Amino acid sequence: MKIAFAASEVVPFAKTGGLADVSGALPVELEKLGHDVKVFMPKYYSVDEHKFNLEYQSWASPMPIRVAGKVFDVNLYKSYLRDSSVEIYFIDCPYFFHRHNLYTNDLDEDQRFICFSKSVIEALQRLHWSPDIIHCNDWQTGLIPLYIKDNYSWDKMFANTSTVFTVHNIGYQGKFSPQTLFNAEISEDLFYHGGRIEQDGLVNFLKTGLSFADVINTVSETYAKELMTPEYSAGMHHLLKYREKDFYGIINGVDYDVWNPETDKLIPYNYSKDDLSGKEKNKEELLKKFNMPYQKDIPLIGIVSRLAIQKGFDLIQSALGELMQFNAQWIILGSGEQKYENMFQALHEQMPRKVGTYIGYNNDLAHLIEAGADIFLMPSHYEPCGLNQIYSLKYGTVPVVRKTGGLADTVQDWNEYNTYGMDTGNGFSFVEYKPEALVNAIQQALFDYPNKPVWKKIQLNGMNKDYSWKHSALQYEELYKKAKLKR
Ligand code: ADP
Ligand code: GLC
Image (cartoon, rainbow, N blue to C red; front, side, top):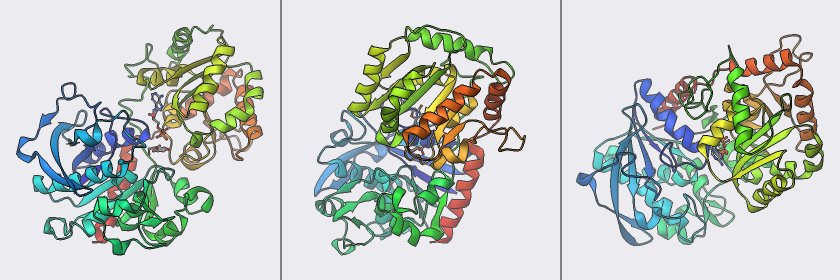
């Protein structure tokens, strides 16, 4: 199949979270299955032309793209995804994409991704490359399925093109005032209360994607079920119920070329399940980086995260008193909401030997925390898939998580008795979104930590798990076949 994959972030070019990891890995895996894949992303200010060997596509540039009644000159650049012949095309429009951050609260945020979505389609036209599938990801690409079925339906090259829309996070929907109808050239007839585009009086890009794509999915089976409920759906449950037959859950895979303690170049000591001694040395290194004392037998709890409410930091905040009583050390890497940045910064200042805090984005440190921590904490309020807990399993870093979404699908509770002697658990989890439940789950982990044979068993259960992309890519292949049958 010919598959065009559109996403607003792709590793290693630009990343704020797991979407970039998925977009950098799934297309390569699809190519290995024999598909012809081309990826499209915006060319942000941070995408370095020289470092990544971007080639200017003079034959296609500039493309005149109309947004909000004005015509912008959009250039096309090309490179390749790591170790593959998957082409990645960069949509270059400095006026829209050279901003401080990938995503903004600027007044023209709608226009930025209208420009991207139209440019993807017009680049396909210039490439004379008629895809079987356009795989769209999150709200930034939500207009593409509508455009293919409406604005660009005149073009016969898309007559057999089906669209797939993947929800990576329902919490971000791209909601804009009705002025956006004009900016995006969406027919006003399509905008009515309770319709396929409107939500609460606003133009909703995510809803548009969910409504117009031939097939839709999210990134774990449990999250797919949760999204059918008002509690988790952020207003989309009626629509998702209506589209239930076309709605699937596929767990993300992991790129073990990047996240593997045996080969990871970003950690000082490689190690494997046959010899975990390197892990302890990484812990020493990690603590040294934060000027924290290394004491054998004191467990180290790690966090690597966007500091957003989604990730359960309000629970941590409510439980801080009890959590800081535990005989454990903490290292936190993250950036995001100011109040959580302040909270972790203050903890570090009050207890520099106990809590290490790094506010910011640091990929090398993310790897070192995965390798050096004993326990990885992810008490998410909701978690579509979550990648860090899957990385943690591979690094023998025992996850403590809230049982929701992809966390519920990947972390099995350690409880020798419940599993009738099967000893299959690889972590600890809690269900109720309450500080007591969080404290209790951490307490259980800390209780088992000194029991070396038990702890090693939990680690090995995780390290033996295989979440490589191949399995998930095969499920996407099936999804694409279903989408094709819809056209
Ligand atoms: P989400 O996409 O919701 O942020 P995931 O667990 O799917 O959550 O993916 C997060 C990804 O972003 C992981 O690869 C993680 O290592 C990375 N990450 C998050 N915060 C940081 C940070 N401050 N520095 C480096 N990497 C980070
Ligand atoms: C989102 C989700 C996260 C998921 C990632 C990749 O940002 O919050 O759970 O792993 O997308 O699908």
